[in-house]
Length: 297
Image 1: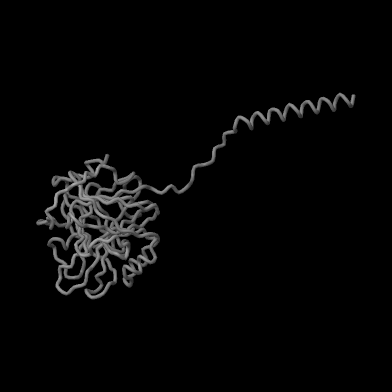
Image 2: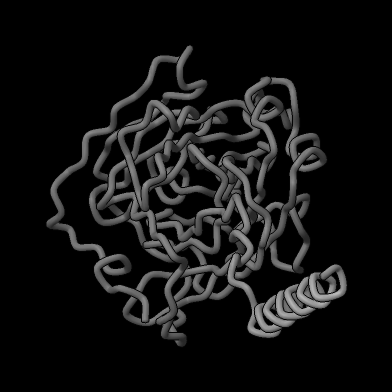
């Protein structure tokens, strides 16, 4: 059963302070801490699924546990399951007519709604621009794809994510990637196609619309990595037939398991047949020696 204190966030939680790293330390340290209002879904369909299973062995609740902004987990004071975590925002918004990926602004959408992203392509603080989205609200602008990067201080497998809010209750997807390195992401010269080409694995998944608990997506990925991208549906990561342009959500928690770096040591126990064989061999040696001793006398 999924823990409700992870899934159901209340507006009464204590506000969290984000501790930005310097640009030299973190690579991306942009963030806002704003209490947005007017966040509502554009679909009137009701929830039909009850999501009860846990997201993973460890659950990082961005609102409860807090966020350290940046790409260096070793400088982060956010620890879950013994793993330090930092979070940064990225979008293809170097210019409003190209697809170059640069750092964006990580937005805390109040103590209830979790986190979103605003990029530099004329986005506003209104629904759904401040969410993690691929929604084009600027007339004549190209579609931008917002992502968050979760950096862990050791290799993990991210097993799923939950979202406190989604833009479309009937058709929402999320894309995810495990990266071997973030050098391409932070270079300021690559597109999502370039980043995906060098990724360990990429995929896209439908977001379940759930009763009583947050919306969620389970990731069927076995790869391990220190760097995980989670963002608005982009068919470059994996085309699952969803509509591109209506995906927006606010990230509230991420499930992960820690990689088993070393296999269990082999057993040193001696089996019963082996022990019996050694005893019989000893008896034969003793008998042989006695026989030779009797002959020599």
